[in-house]
Image 1 (cartoon, helix red, strand yellow):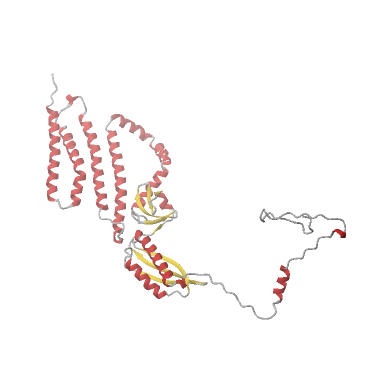
Image 2: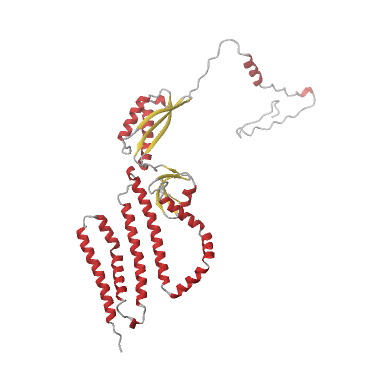
Length: 396
């Protein structure tokens, strides 16, 4: 006697019909909302998981009314597992669409995007945490559909306290970083795109994960730090309130430096620079120490990249202008000599001359003054090796 495959075809037909309805709905919505990019992007993200989820859901409902036990497999069980996996896929795609919506239109270089960058940071953390939790729950729910796993879970609950303590100790560092990452996401201390100074390094926050943060250094190196570092260690955030930065250039000049002309030159340099935001520029004398004046030139920049370029342009322009038009203002070391008054030298000078006079050498003994004395002089090794050494008495 053969197997009746009619119930199987019924289940397959209903599933295909559900998938076809989703495709039809997508076509209609695409025509209605064709000019809305966000809706179109959302439909592209969730179309496949929604289509498959609908087909599996309709198949699972149809199994309540159709008997397929003749296939000798637990069809309902496997369809349930597919529903759990596809449901996790669909939720992950929905979370991803929320993250993409928060990231769209955000510009790290615009000062008015502070709130947008805060939302983007939060959406990234929510997406990662939510996706992880979704798949963990789906996996656990799928395992519980097996009788063997249910019995194992019941035995595990009896020792949940001991296992929980062991896992807590083993994952203490991981959990610390995870909680710190969530704290960063929903706080204002650190956001994606912020300019920070950490461990003596200047860079931009490129990525905030659940357990670590990636800082892109100005020379393209990456500094990776655990999330707990930012919760326990002080760091400098230059853009916590605004992306606008003020560049500062310091240099020393002579006291005859024309400050008013320098102000006009600074205005000319900043006006010609594409890195100046047109808001502020100043030149001030901040100190006078010894023979030098300390000059400070400041100008505002719209972002960190322009901040550094503008600083270099101002320093190059002002120093070159001073060297070309006012070379007498270039810092120099002055040395002066007091004139010697007429008359006898002072007593202390005579004493100094007496002190520095060399002591005269005693004459060498002559041959008739007593027994002959042989005097041997060692040559000075610092002189030229071809020097000829002779005895003063003519001994050779």
